[in-house]
Image (tube, rainbow, N blue to C red; front, side):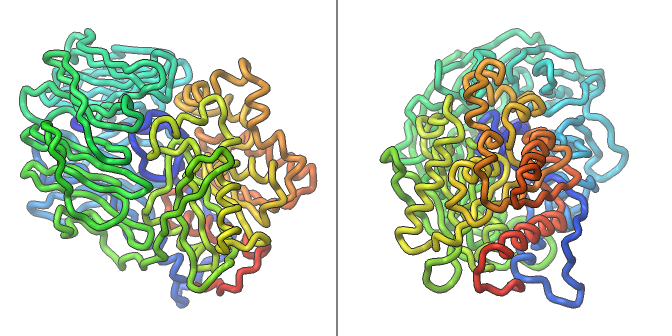
Length: 633
């Protein structure tokens, strides 16, 4: 968003729609394991080449110097920030963070590269800035405590930082080089969303009404900190701040709302207080990506059944599709000259950053990623009679295949038609891979997403098992060779599934999971505490029976499935103590299991560590599930 940078506190895997809090599995760092390395003289298998292939994120450019870009790339062997002046130089690597870093931004004047400095993967730290050309880095603003990040906005001589701590959430404002002052605090989540083009107005999203799933908006005067506007659509309806107009003097804010059941764009004019919802005749969700520079139109992303389309949406509601390949858009903006840039990929094709017309405008150095098996769109009916959608990727030949049921994190997230080396690694080894967008997933409307409120865990398990039944029935899956796995919330559903239905799975792999829910709640980040209070309807102290009923540890006596568990020592989304409680109980019961620990947080941004973890999963599963596929593929 214009003038803003948000950091999620969710349990998930990749880029997510602008939902305030969930469990995502962003990539962090890692320590070596005992898994054997591939000798340098032996060509790396294709699955490993996909992990090692250099990629770039969608770039951010400076408002007043758009030739200066900041983006992340894994070309050095871990995700690090790079700076590139397109007018006169080659890209420069800015960071060398041991655990890796995937997100950063740039100051409006283009003179500084900014990122959140988290050295351990626990996601607590400070915002820092370094000159664009290189040099001494420093704190972006003095006087701000170490904390979880809850948004950032940088204007002309004004810096606004959001923080989350155990005692609540706060907004800090720094004028020039002066130390920051705390201007707002609340026990419920507050997230900085962005400054208006002139820097006079600041918008933040908040859950001060007690609902961390359906956020409200507040705009304050950035000089006096007095409230300039409030927007809340009422119980069960969320709002997202999508970006201020880029036209000088314009005080209009683009928003996303849920009044029509699916996310739709709107305009909130703070100069008059008037709100206008824009009607779009499209079947899926519509998110605002950016404004056109002249403020006559919005760039919007239409998401339907796991694939994306870009449109120019005039403020008169005229809709014009922007041509691009089929797949998923994971970043898009309009350049000052009106040119649209976007990042796109599909299951079979690695991401590229291109401009309208398809010309690639940003790429990393190195050998491009090998292609993969395309995804086919897939749907089935669950026990309630609801349509459930997802994707399937299969190896060559006809089934039935051994199946890897890949359960996504979140839960407020979804699998889309996007490039995932881990999916292709399973396909290379002879597995069909199924990706179910269970109840609670995003992209299918507000009602579908909110079906988990007060009822988490069981619906997702039911939908995953209904998907398994559908694939067995249509001949895709061999019922004797089915494996379940996933990361974060997907790891939680994996452990819950093998406790409730252990007879269905020949093996399981749960990465950074929720395993002992009451203890996870005690140790997790404050944003996730707020999310879980909304998800369950209260705390473990208030709802002990529900938390126990939906905790995998409760069903551990019934686990017969061999399970591999991967856990980060510094994880504050799915903390290590509750994982170890589960593992210690498996040991006491004599259940077949392995534990893989790594020295980071909620995942890995180090390529070698990603490969070690993938190799560990493949070795664990293939030792227990025959496939007939060669290990060197």
